[in-house]
Length: 334
Image (tube, rainbow, N blue to C red):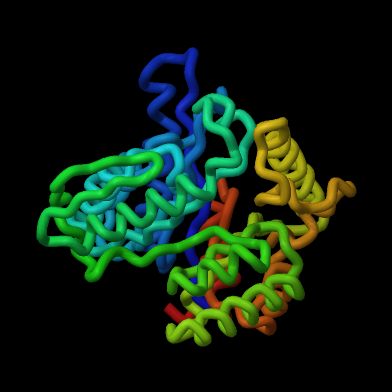
């Protein structure tokens, strides 16, 4: 198995600038240590208007991480294409890829949170069409060495060449967050890599990987298990009491996420909104427990075809060190 990170940082408002920045600086140091511990890559979220300081400028933060690391893959999970000028985004992403020596994993999505669609004054019904048009412009911009024009529903560009070119050719790998059968098929037809969420049970994860592989190969692409990454909240506990406390903290975190996600503008069935409200249901498949308990859960994931696991919600470097020391050696493949 290969291990990565998933998540973000927080820079709070209403405090001194140094205190606000500390969350980002701590996050960067966490990435540096993760690389030293053998973590393969890190996928960073994008969110807006949360009042809790979640990462909004993902590529900016990853540029700091790139400057402090040498091998860590730099992922976005995900940049929400409907909210961005696709040419400016293509330029920014290519700059990071070039400066990092070709380490960008470009994770993209359509968005799902009520407060974000409402804040951007954007109808959720436009998410799909904006995503499609934005992705078409970005990929064309990356591969075109000659000027091109684009006249679409949302964007119009005349005789442009995007600079700089990305280091990876034809462009950085695309990763798409998907859960429904329709979205997984769309991801596979594009030849994109697949990001799966923190909440689904191993059996459902296995079904989604099987569908992705079938559709990917039917479209003429080569399947590799490392093209699928599965996120999981984690905490390495010493005993049952620590496990119970960690599960309680995770339940509170999930409730905060639900509060941000629900609303009239939210896209139903997306991410955490697609799972049961029953107590403990969203925590049931987290990698929270003693080393032996976590190892058993990883074995269950590996049994259904998972080879790349993204660890989410660690918080402390001590916890990541415990995972690297007590669990990774039995599973890691590089």
